[in-house]
Image (tube, rainbow, N blue to C red; front, side):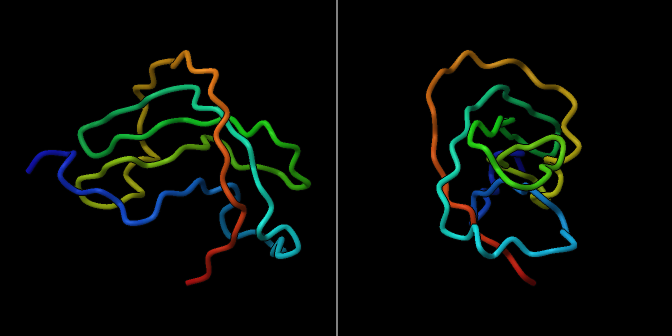
Length: 100
């Protein structure tokens, strides 16, 4: 099975993991970002992003969007082979929360 056979159902950027306070008042806010690098490993493929909107909370390190994965989307957290991307396109997403 090839690493690119398994596509995630949700595309997201984890800006905070298990925050102490939930930023629900920002739900629905548009966040602007740029793609700054492309990364791949034996287990996953992702693009590293830079948030260009001002956000009123601390962002986690290694912000990225998982594109494909072999076993689990979390495999993209361990990519070390990143290549810079020259793309000045500004993308937009909506800030929302996720609760298990």
